[in-house]
Length: 287
Image (cartoon, rainbow, N blue to C red):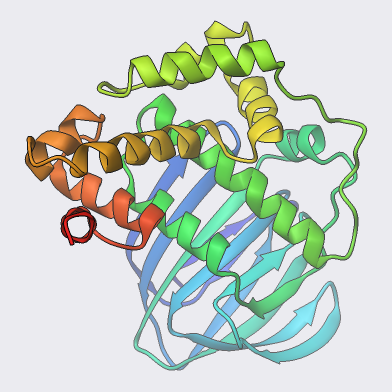
């Protein structure tokens, strides 16, 4: 067996041989990614005290067994699955590859209770959601040792919980809302515009309005519809678009001038926001 761990509330018994395993922790989520050598059928016994979201990247196609003692047999039509905290699954995966790859995210219960006090999630196997998948893959590819990563992780977690809440058919409670004042939003906006050419820390932004980083992320998202990280990237892209109209600067110079760490980072984020790469955008403005 690849992993064997059991202590009542925590059960993880997984077939196959682990080839690699990475773990990333933030204040609100823990991300574990695995690659395994597996046979055609993989035994899996799982129970966690946290809400778990799985992204099956390769191998898994069908899961059958018992879920809290009730039998089930389901094809995985999509690459995502959600297992509520405390749910016990004792089953068997059917796989189509000798190598299995997957990522699992565990959500901090205190964070869920604070953000969505009435949150509830039913087991859901084999569904697709491009926004959840893309955001998680981006988190897995980013450096994860700074405040910016924590900001990205919390923003993704908030959006994912909202998606899951909506899929469950329950309405999010409205009593726990509270955004930033117009004065605070203006202060943040001016600060960002003045500092686009350098790294902008989450703690810097939060301190401008006298909030903790966690409360700032929540309040900012409720006021603008974007996480602070998304907002900053959007402003960098808008500044870059203005500079691209001119022939005065190279693409590399523009990327660095608006705060991207290197040219590839600039190209990736610019294309994500506009649908075209910087060079094509510049060419189009000259036609």
